[in-house]
Length: 335
Ligand code: UT7
Image 1 (cartoon, rainbow, N blue to C red):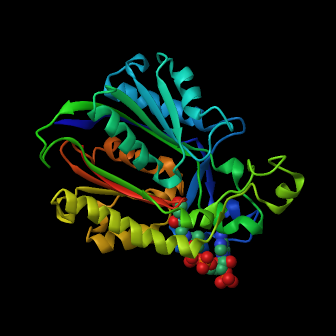
Image 2 (cartoon, rainbow, N blue to C red; image 1 turned 120 degrees about the vertical axis):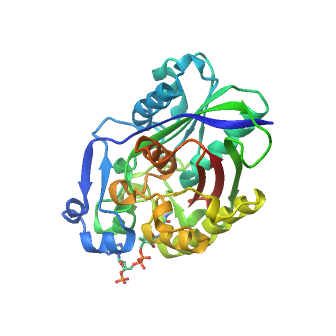
């Protein structure tokens, strides 16, 4: 049986650190409120002129280097982002050109915080069927240029940061057993009845022109969120999805070396880990340093874990995410 394996990991965070105190200078918030409600202490912001593919490039290069592969070895790029460089074409095309790949397949996916898991399922299907041999899966986001820094946006703005993570995936023969290396199970879901609970309305193809001065005045180009509802769904769906993949593989939380959840709120992750019976020391969180980087959070977490030496080959990883759409999912990977 063919298994999808992680061949290389990389991440890149822009150097500019933005603290809670700095945000409190432009809006009515405080370090105390942000830390208490979310666990976030600081996040990273890009400099003017830097887009999602610019952040993705160094992350992808690191992942390729770790995999011992050249950009010309890639057969497919999957770019998960809700903040593409431009409306079209997709950021995967910009990245493909910048990396210097062959004329390969390059596509963007828009499943927000669950983007990495959706991308993993797509890559897994292509690799296991032998369609492609090496896939670059990237999550990269530039949120800072699309946030409302007035009091109106404080509930959302304090949460998000910029960053990129990348994984090079390849195919390897496995025995079809839970002891195999690679992706053992990945499941993703959506429930569009929640689409308007965390969304960004403008620009919209339903209006002509797509963006008006009125829309800008009303802040419709900024994300809007029903925070309490999203919190409730996240703490329900993430453990449910994680338990599903464990059950499917006949495993328990005790088998998991590292739980790497999406980073939206430290309180969400603590609740989810508790529901699953995973102790804090086996749950990877970096939200205090980066905030929520949406599709980039899981690959940044994986890359940091590997770089720190805390993730060893053979370790079982449990991933879970929930976000806008609503979309959610979970995966079990033996590193
Ligand atoms: O990755 C995508 C998925 N996103 C998420 O998973 C986010 C899920 N939601 C959350 O993490 C939380 O709901 C938030 C962190 C967004 C908010 O925390 P909360 O404990 O649910 O607060 P709340 O929305 O119930 O608001 C409590 C109070 C309100 O004031 P009043 O009405 O009690 O006077 C808010 O206006 O906190 C106020 N507030 C703030 N105060 C200071 C909201 N944002 C801020 C802020 N600073 N930044």
